[in-house]
Length: 256
Image 1 (tube, one colour):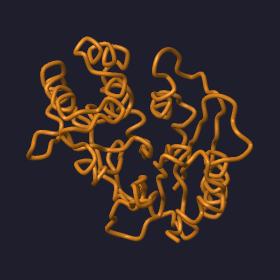
Image 2 (cartoon, one colour):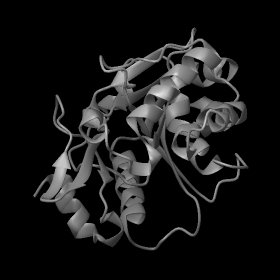
Image 3 (cartoon, one colour):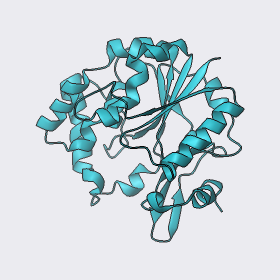
Image 4 (cartoon, helix red, strand yellow):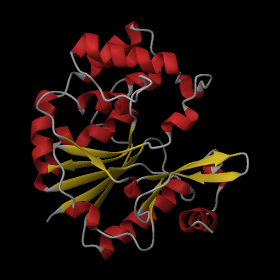
C-alpha cells in the first residue's frame, strides 16, 4: 500500500499556531506509519475565484499524485491523536470518501445563518442539484441535505482517474449557484463534492467520523461530535483556535 497525506496553506505560513502544529503532528504521524507527506505553501495549481478551496481536489487533476494508491487531503485545523493508526488507508473505499457531519442538524436550525447557511438555502441547493444536474443528493426526512465534511477527503487511485472524467465543471457549478442566489459557501468545494458524490458512475464511500471528529465552541466550552470508535483525527472548528497554544490544542485533542 502506498499512500500520501496532502496539506496546503494559502498565504504566508505561520511559524506557530494551529496550522503549524497540524503540519508537525501529521509529519510525525506519517513517519510513524511509513506514509508519505506533502505540504504546499501558496499552491497555484488552481487559479481564479474559490481556488483556495478547490485545491482540496488537486489530487484528482495533478497526475503526480496518481502514483499513490491513496491520497488523504487534510485541512490545517485537523490533528492526528497520539494513538492514531494507519487503519484509514486499509479501509476499502470507492472513488473518494468523506465523513458525515453527524451534528449538522443541531446547528443548522430554522433560524441559524452561520456563514450564510440557512435551511431555505440548503433546500434550494438540493433543488438546484436536481434541476441543473439531475442528481438527487441524500437528504434527511426534513428535506435538508446530509452534510459530508470536505476538511478531510480520501481519494483512491481509481477515483483519481475516474472522477475528473465524471465530475461537473467547477466554474460552471459555481456560476449556477451564484445565479440561483446562493452565497459563496454553496459555490465552493464542500457542496460541489456533495453533488459529485451522487453523480451516476461515481462510487462514494462514507468514512467513520472517528477520522474526522469535529470539535465546536459552545457557551460552556467545547462540544465533540460523537463517534462510533475512538477518535483518530480531531477537527478543531472552534472560534478560539487561532489563539490556542500547542499545549492547549493538545489538551483539546486528548479531551483533558
